[in-house]
Image (cartoon, rainbow over all chains, first blue to last red; front, side, top):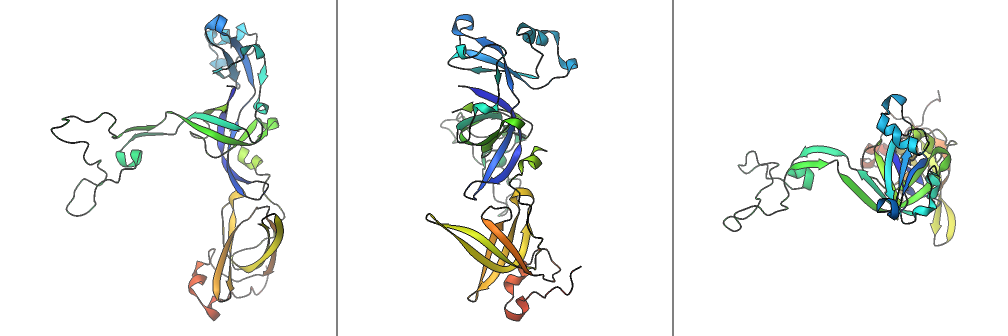
Amino acid sequence: MLALFGIKVGMTRIFDDMGNVVPVTLIKAEPHLVIQVKTKASDGYDAIKLGFGQIRKKLVSKPYEGVFKKANMEPLRYIREVKISEPDKFKTGDKIDVSIFSPGDKVHVVGISKGYGFQGVVRRYGFKGGPKTHGQSDRLRAPGSIGASSYPSRVWRGQRMAGHMGNKQVSVKNLRVDSVEPERNLILIRGGVPGKPGGIVKIVKA
Amino acid sequence: MLKAVESKHIKENIPDFKPGDNVRVHVKIREGDKERVQVFQGDVIACRGSGTGSSFTVRKISAGIGVERIFPLHSPNIIKIQVLRRGDVRRAKLYYLRELRGKKARILKKAKEK
């Protein structure tokens, strides 16, 4: 499935034709260049390697530069690979931009969720915690019992406990494209998208 | 940054009004597939938000019952806002009017425009 990568800019609300308020996320997706086309014959699977964004000369290492040299192009900030079904539709140097999407399209958005660090069970899973009063102490945010006694004499796998929250890949499916602005490389998607503003998200055609 | 660019949905011809003012709001209303304009007249008791999300609350007494309506300031459904009277108030949110009845619930007219 054809996909594009962009930077989450932030959220705002706009009005649709009926005058309804619509929450939208702004994603800035600069034009992508095809660096390499991978096919079943050459690499065992069908995909295209995409590059996008500007990069300062200083940050380009020799091996990194080599990837682009092979395709005869200037180095780009990010390299990502997208699996596609028809690799012969693309060739090295092709440009792909936000105009592949049109208003009303359904898309999946994949991103890295906001990192919350090590969180207790109340914040991470919405546990109620313990009572504040009735002679209790140090129980306010405790998880409570984590299992039975002699059987099974262990904690079941999957028991929800405190731990690291967020900063992992999250997909949101079937969001609607509200509008696309190719002049500004912007795409407006109805609803929220994983991660903080400034994070990279992948927009996949659904 | 790009957010400012995005706000082409903001209306520019909004009259300047503040909490305490008496306003008449013309709203487009859709009933089935008919469209008509409804007028809502009352006192502005609150304004909030910025950008496309800003809204204001209008309160009126209709048949003895207090009615409040919250309008999105930049909604295309709002055709016109007329300011009928400026009010002299000292607060930004006039929620205290909800507890008051009759004479006390009046908002004094602003003596002079500055």
